[in-house]
Image (cartoon, rainbow, N blue to C red; front, side):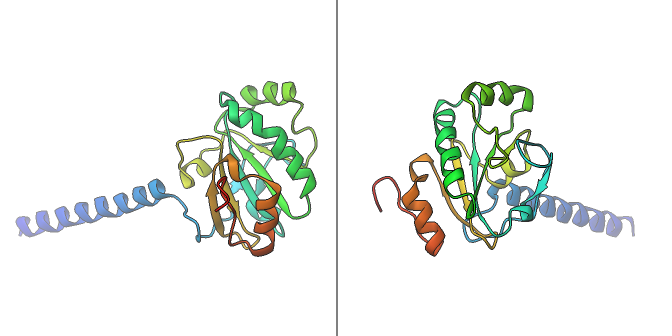
Length: 181
């Protein structure tokens, strides 16, 4: 009888390990194009009407997540362009710069660059959930999400331009890379 209990207990532990591994694999793989972004709460936001927001608070607009860091020169060079594009497409697109760094780290940099003083460009800081959902190695890193909340593209900085935003807003199914493909 004790052998049977030991066998059942061992099978239970193996199944729990398999279930835990599946959950870990989902986090490792993240969200891919074609999948819907859950209605996450963004807990730490600078330069926005509230200190936190849900993804659904930006409904009616396409969203472009801009993963960046204070030590990344290309990221810092892109922030003025992102802010200009946000102003230009304010009624159709919401750029959301996202960093894992703290407000204490990024605020002096934003002040120095004179970026994000309006509520048009909310800066999400100390963010880990989005980092897990969209794992990446290189920065800057952009996630294009349509009005329905479906991830459409994952790109680098070369694709962040007026032509691609216009195309994305029209069809939400095609953008061109830097080679024009």
